[in-house]
Length: 276
Image 1 (cartoon, rainbow, N blue to C red):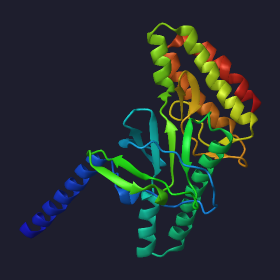
Image 2: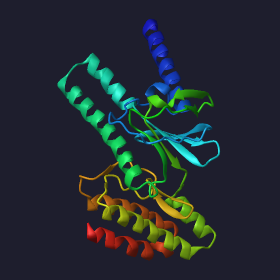
Image 3: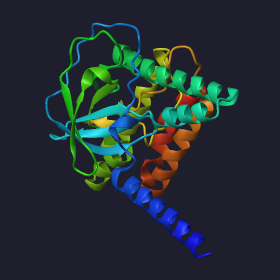
Image 4: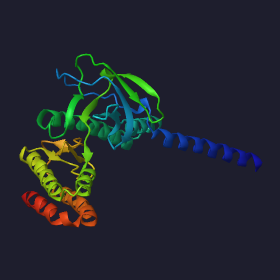
């Protein structure tokens, strides 16, 4: 009995340490960064300002770092799900894991292709400054990233796919700032510009599988931009329900915090929904 209690205590201690480390680092390690580049060669020049990039947050697709001048965000793509599934497949070589692994690898490629499409067709609209997604590029300088613990790492930029964007404010942050300053008309115009941005993408026949207005869009110098361009496609049709759900989420926030903008926001987006 005493031996079992010791083993239990030891296991709990290991779990506690692992949980603490996860919280302190946000789960980030260099080993979890994807090295899967697109095989199509390109001659696109990569321009990354030479400075440190400090850990900011993580999303479903990437680890996000903020440049020390606050002007850029560097996104390195996450590979932890694929690595975990690959390990599971090696331990249990079942068909179901093989199928899921192939699907996940294809999703990673589609994400890179999406950003490539955005850079080529909607560079300004997505605030993209530079991308490194393909093999065969000119030599790239080392990237200096600082993790959540404040530890600096220097990595070979040639080995990793990444994107560099101009830092934008979130939609809610921008609208809140305008309203706090009493610029109600500017806030209304900003929402109209946001609808126009999406209308322009749809007109370009570029479809978005994740049109989350609250999380995936922002404002840069007063103009709307799409900060997450990882679900773009020229082949998949636009889905009205996804945009409608995303519109309703932001609508609810506006209704609660700035009801004087509710009608203008609804009027700006209704034509988009009807057109799909």
